[in-house]
Length: 326
Ligand SMILES: NC(=O)c1ccc[n+]([C@@H]2O[C@H](COP(=O)([O-])OP(=O)(O)OC[C@H]3O[C@@H](n4cnc5c(N)ncnc54)[C@H](OP(=O)(O)O)[C@@H]3O)[C@@H](O)[C@H]2O)c1
Image 1 (cartoon, helix red, strand yellow):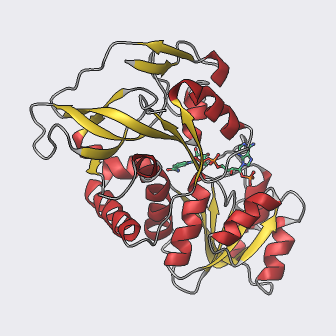
Image 2 (cartoon, protein in one colour):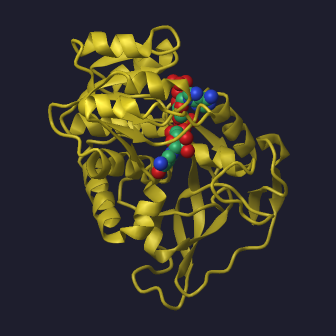
C-alpha cells in the first residue's frame, strides 16, 4: 500500500511517500481501507518528535480516519467486511490501509461523506467533552473561544451555540473572524490587533466570561484568564502557539475560577461508555443538520506534507482532509 512515512523526526518536507507492507489486524482490531483522514494539530507535532509519545520508526501520522472494513480480528463481533466506519487511532492514518481497535470504531452514518466523517470524531469529540463534561457549560453563559476558526475551535463554536451559550470568538485575521460569524459567533475579537483582556471586559460589561476554550496557549492564555468572570472555567485544550504558559495562580483565587484540563483521547480510553454516548449525541446532531464540519482544503495522500505545513503556518480554517481517492 501507499503511505506517508516518517523515517526520522523532522519537518513535514522530510516525510516520504512510499510503498509499504499492508498492516495486519490483531484479535480485537479491524483493518480498514482508508478513504479519508483529517489533519489534526498533533500530527504536526508527532512527525517532529514533539508530541506526548514518540512512535517507533517507520510510522505514518494521522489519527482521524474514515473508510471501509477489509478484515476483522477473530474477537470482533460488531463489524464485518464492507462496513463503512469512522475511527480514531494514535497514528497510521495517512495511508491506504490502517488498523483501528474495534472499540474505537463507529458505524459511519449514511449520508455522511467519507471526508466529513474523517473530520468529525476528534474535533467534535474534544469540544463536546470539554464543554459538557469539563466546563459544564450552561444555557445563557458566555464563552470566549481562542483560535475559534481552527479545527477544534470552530467545533467548540458550533457546539456552544447549540448548547445555548453566547460566543465571543477570537482569531488572528478578518477572514478567520468572518468564518466565525458565519458559524454564529455573537462577537468577534482580532487578538493580533486588539487587547484580548480589555476587549472581553468591554463586551461583557466588565463581568468577564463564564468559560474560556483555549487551544492556543502562549501569552493569550493569561490575557484571557484575566478576563474571566466569577466562578469561571478556563479549559486547557492545547498549545498551538508553541508555548506552554506559566500562569500566576492567584488569578484563580480572585475570581473563584478553575483551570480545567481536557484530554479527549485519555477520556475516550478511561471512560468509554461516556465517550460512546457523547459520540452518539454528536452523530445525532449531525444527522439532524445541526453540525456542519467546515472543510477548508482537501489534499491527495502524496501532498499530505503540504497539508501539515499549511496547518503549522496558521494558514488553515476549520478542517483539512487527506482524500485517498484523489
Ligand atoms: N486536549 C485534547 O484532547 C485535544 C484534542 C485535539 C486537539 N488538541 C489541541 O488543540 C490545539 C488545536 O488543534 P487543531 O487541530 O484545532 O489545530 P488548528 O486547526 O491548527 O487550530 C489551531 C489554531 O490555533 C491558532 N494559533 C495561534 N498560534 C498559532 C501558531 N503559532 N501556529 C498554529 N496555530 C496557531 C490558529 O488560529 P489563529 O491564527 O486565529 O490564532 C489556529 O487556527 C492543538 O494544540 C492540539 O494539540 C487537544
